[in-house]
Image (cartoon, rainbow, N blue to C red; front, side):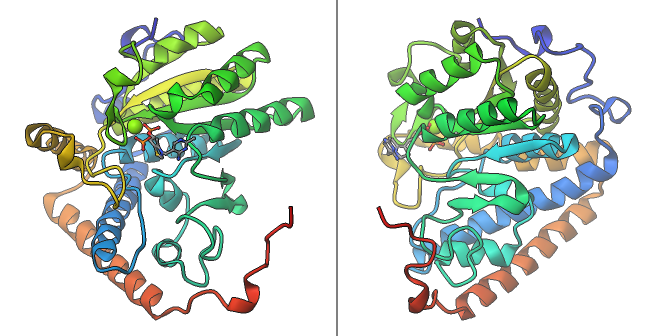
Length: 347
Ligand SMILES: Cc1ncc(C[n+]2csc(CCOP(=O)(O)OP(=O)(O)O)c2C)c(N)n1
Ligand SMILES: [Mg+2]
C-alpha cells in the first residue's frame, strides 16, 4: 500500500503541513518562504524565457520544470535545511538546480551551450554533468540510470560511515525501468540512506501512466522492497518540504523512503514535443489551472507574508534578472575549440 499524509508511517502527524502560519513545518520561517518564492518565480521566468529562445533558434533543446517547481524546490529546501545531503536530480530539474545556487547567467550559458556552462562547458545536454560544490550530480539523460548511480553513492556513504543522505529524483516513466527495481531492491536490502523522489507527472513523453503501470501509486511499490512509500501532493510546497524533511531523517537512521510527488507537466515533454497530439485541450487547460507557483503566491498573500504589490515586484525583478542573463549569454563565446578534448576520457 502507499501511505498518504494522514497515515504517513514516518511522520509524527503534527507537521502542520499546508496550514496557518503558526504551524509552519519545522525549521521553516516566513522569511524562508518569501525568499523561496522569489527563487521559484525566477526559475519559472527563466524556464519561460528558455522556451521562447528555443523558438528563436538560440537554445537547441530544453525540458521544462513548469509544474514541478514545488516538488523540486520544496524538497531541495528540506535537503538544505538538513545540511548533510547529496542530490541526483534528472533532466526536468531546472528549478532545483537553479535554486541550489546557479546564477541566471550560468543557467543561460548552459542552455545556449556557451563557454562558462558550469556543468559541462557546453558539451552535454543543458545542466547535465556534475556540480560538486553544490553536492549535485546528473550524469546523463538515460532514463532510470540515476537510480542505480545514486544508490551506489548511498552504499558508499554507508560503507564509509558518512551520515550523508542521498536524494534521487526520477519520473514516473523511469519507475517502470528495470534499473528502478534493481536500485530500490538493493537499497532496501542494505537499508541505505536514500530518499527516492518520483516526480509523477502522469506521462512518459506521450505515454500516459495507465499504459506504463497497472497501479495508481508508484509509492505502493515500496512495500515490495521493504520500506515506506508515501504519496505527496507535489503541487503543495509546504507538504513537499515537510514530508521530505521527515523522509531524510528516516533515511539517515532507518533506511530508504520512496516519496511519490504527484506533479503536473504544464508544458510538452521537451521543446521538441507537441503535446496537442496526445493531450486533449481540456486536460491541458485543467492542469494549468493548478499551477504550483501561483498556488504558493496565493498562500503567501493569504497568510499576510506578501502583499499583491510585492508579488508584482518579485515578478518584475525576476524578469529583469532573466533579461540580463539572456544578454550576457548571447554575447558570450562558444567554448574555445582548443578545449574540445578537455575532460574527455579515452575509452
Ligand atoms: C533508457 C532510455 N529509454 C528511453 C529514453 C527516451 N526518453 C527520454 S525521456 C523519456 C520519458 C521519461 O518519462 P518520465 O520518467 O515520466 O519523466 P518525465 O519526462 O515525464 O519527467 C523517454 C522514454 C531515454 N532517454 N532513456
Ligand atoms: Mg513523467
